[in-house]
Amino acid sequence: MKTLLLTDVPTSIFVKNGWITFRSGTFEERHLPSTIPYEMVAVTDYRGFISSEAIHILGVRGIPLLFLKFDGTMVGTFIPSEDLSNAPMKIAQIQAYMDEKRRVAIAHAIVKEKTKKELEMLDYLGKKHPFPSIEKAVNMITKTMSHFDADATTPDLTYHYESICAQSYWSALKDVFSAIAPNADFITRKVAKHSPKNAGDSANAVLNFLYTLLLAHVRFRVYQSPLMKDVGFLHYPIKSKESFLYDVEELYRWVAELAAIRFFEDVKPKSSDFIKSFDLVVRLRPDTAKAVTQIFDDLMSRKVGRGRDRRSLPFYLRESVNVFERHLLRGSPLEFNLPPLTAIASDVGYITETEVGEKNILGLK
Image 1 (cartoon, rainbow, N blue to C red):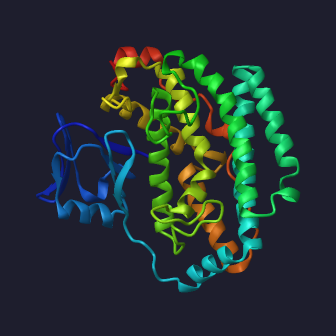
Image 2 (cartoon, rainbow, N blue to C red):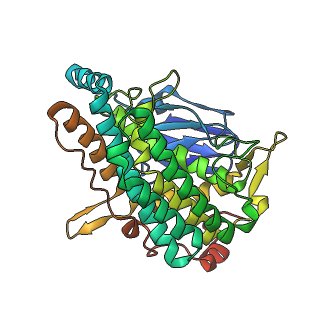
Image 3 (tube, helix red, strand yellow):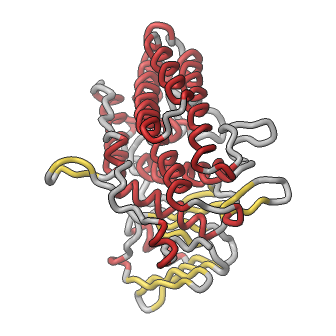
């Protein structure tokens, strides 16, 4: 998996003599449409132009086009080929939401998979950072989930139990970020003056950017299916919120969190790699965003399995959407079978600090 991040001024994507050109500041690449090496294109600056022919080519090739704000949050996307043909699927999704018992059962499956990955993350981090808070979080999540099925019998209670686990998880990750990025000033995913979406520190700024990239992949996979993006089961379907996308994203948030941890561990960014705006919102500089994207792409591209049956995370993401489809139409089990976190977190193939200094691969100063 490879993402093209265009961050400099001016940015343009156009077609000339049958070749598509991607240009951003001094960067320029030309490709025949059939040889475009990217699975996603993200643009972070509005100054420039994108031709309709270029958009058409990206759509034909099945390549999403993502537009980001200055702080890394999403403005909008162009997603190729939304499947609107399966009315029975849409009816089944609405019926499952209206049936509270079924809605709770689906939400339970999402929370169980999410907390399973949280425990895997804590186990992985605990071997490198044996903080008491990690053991405490593991015990709290395990205790909470031990009576989850019996007690979380409504949508509100399900969300409440998920929140308890998340608070314990992030209390442990706070100590990890403090150890690997003491200058990041990370407190939590929510502090008094800043919500997570308006990052007041560099750690949250990196996490926000990664969640945006992850959500773009989720949106692409859901839009390729007949499922409706705004009828979720764990998250409430309210105005302006694509609740089902957030349901699916919950299954893979650990990938963004792992990428953020690896970024601070491997790259060791400085405060100068971030920009703090006049309202104290922190955002990534262009080169920093490219470095974060590269690490995220690397994790998403890693194949796990045996022999020929080796699959990368985009395959698992697509299969997770298919699991929802099969469950809603045929009542098949909600078994997501995601790869172990340790298989994705393998150190093999990572760029070392020496290579960063010698080759400036990540572009950080």
